[in-house]
Image: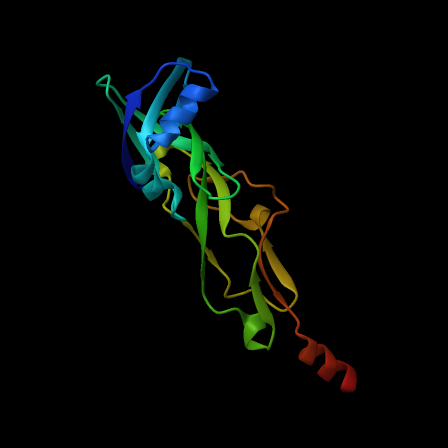
Length: 191
C-alpha cells in the first residue's frame, strides 16, 4: 500500500474558540490514538490534507510531528463542513506492522460480463470495500473479475476471496451485478 507523508504541529486541548481560531489559520485539528498510547492532539495544513482526503485512494499515513516523532496511521474518521465541504476534524488510528489493519480500499472491475454480452445492463453498487490485512500485505485496490457474471446475477462481498486479505465488509454488500433490460423482458414476453 502507498504511504502519504503528512507534517503536523502538536497542539493543546482547547475550547471551541481555540479550535475555530485554528481553522481560520488554515489548519485542521487532528487526533491520533490507538495501540495503547495516549491521545496526541495536533494540527495539519488544510492544503496538505487535501492530497489525502480528495482522492479515491487509500494510504498508510506517515505522520511527522514537530516533536520529532513519526507515527504510522490510517484515517479513522473525517468530519466535513455541511455547506462548504472543508475538512473540520480528522481522527487518525495508529497502526503497526504486527497487527492487522482494517481499511477501506477501492474496487476495480475487470473483464467483460457474459450477461452484458447477452444484452443485460451492468451496475456497480460499491466502489469501496473494507478489508483487513497486515501492513505488508495491504493492496492499493481490490480487483473483481466479472467475466463469468451472467444475467440477473450479483457479486457480493461474501463471494470475494483473496490471499492474505480478509474482507470485513458485510457479506451481503452487493459489489456489482447484471440486470435484464426492459427490451429483453419485452422480447421474451413477445416470443
